[in-house]
Image (cartoon, rainbow, N blue to C red):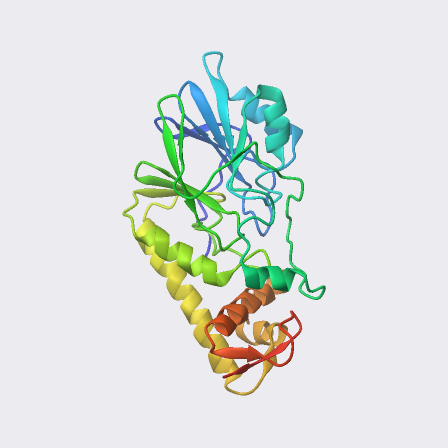
Length: 303
């Protein structure tokens, strides 16, 4: 799914999305972040800052500059510990004195199979992890965070990374990097876990949502359709991998080159890691097995 051409927000400027909600886009565009990281300001007096963003003096100044004299920052909420979402939380906390809330440190929420993979030197991964992140307050699935005229309910949505949180704000959801409108999420072992990702999709599909506010890109105005597309997209990729393996064992790299024929070369590495995530998931479902140890370079075969 291609990004909408009309999403070109001003960088560093707080824009009102609806009453009690503003968005500031950080100046960190890239093939993985689209126009930049979305920082959200929730509330009208005591403000919750969701995803302060990357370490950036300019973005820190933009956030602080958006706080009017009759307002203050009461909470700093981090959805997950990638470098485009969490590092600025420390400087922001020092500037305003608000506590930092998040699920946990960089490895929090990682499943046992991913812990095993992480211990293998061949696995790689670790794309842009904020290794220094440590919240002042840990937030668990279902926890309520209440502020001045607003409340958020935490939804643990691992998959993109084990410590990923989404937040329900009434019938709106801050979906961070789990659901975005401009691209599907990267799921890269050992931090990304496709088994968890699909379970998190099913979790979000239980509720009726009016809108998703993602970590990158425009608001998702039809969450149900977007969720259905994400699930079908993953199932299509899985079917393609199983079909390719019918011809014989293959590595994640070889499968990515065969399946992602329209992917730009610069993104083929990310495609390979998505394939690896599928292979690990299929291994857990006893549909494929590695030829030898379960490592990044292993060939996989159908069972």
